[in-house]
Image (cartoon, rainbow, N blue to C red; front, side, top):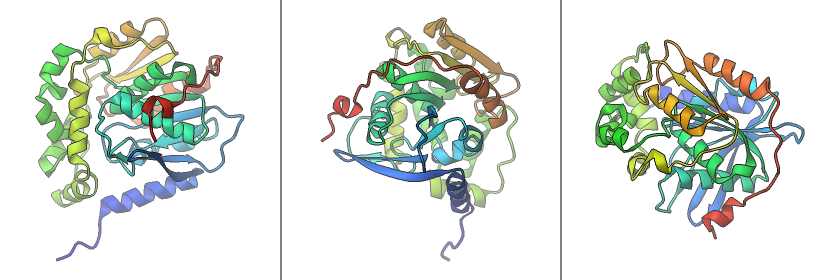
Length: 314
């Protein structure tokens, strides 16, 4: 019998409506050389407002991670929400899989949108990309928020793998292909896991959100682990807020302290009690507001590095 209804597809449509109602529109641009980047952009960019770039982690697409943040941020910022490569409607035929390449593609997208300077917020894998943007495009980035992003992973950590499992096991959990793996992902992500529902709902989510670009996403995870040493991680100099869950099982909270120490005086750390890797939007926004809205932004020099030139797109 043919499947006629999908709760996951319905939820995705609701998020699209919510983003549109919040003043954003869907925009895709061909960067050339087989690379297309999709982004939710303001219907009207207000020149007097700063720009905030929200970068999602592993999961469905950008809408699912940031839907709760848009209404609270849109009055202060021009909010841009890209889909990273192989999520949502972003993709490439190029072979690169590093967070550095993701960062260059995001900023090439910003070039195409005539956006020069940005503040950044990256969650989990998106924090790896945000950190790389801050390192590569120093003069274009004002402030940085990193949520549960284990960018300080070193060789000893990668030998254990994410969740203290092998890389292959981590891939199977991050891109679940059966209901038990979805439940395992939820258990690892939340300090107090919510109910996951019956198998039919979980299978629907897998079919809609976890089957496309599986090989490419596997390569993204593998790229995070290749030849990674803390000593080779550049130090970003922008004011940085690090937010972490006290009981994060994916990137243990010790990594938050290591990252703060690595960045130095320009970083501040907030550890949220009784939370795991998946942080509640209300708690996240409270700290984001204090850092991004209530505190005056730093002065920018305005020196623009063109990401298209770095990528050598045709």
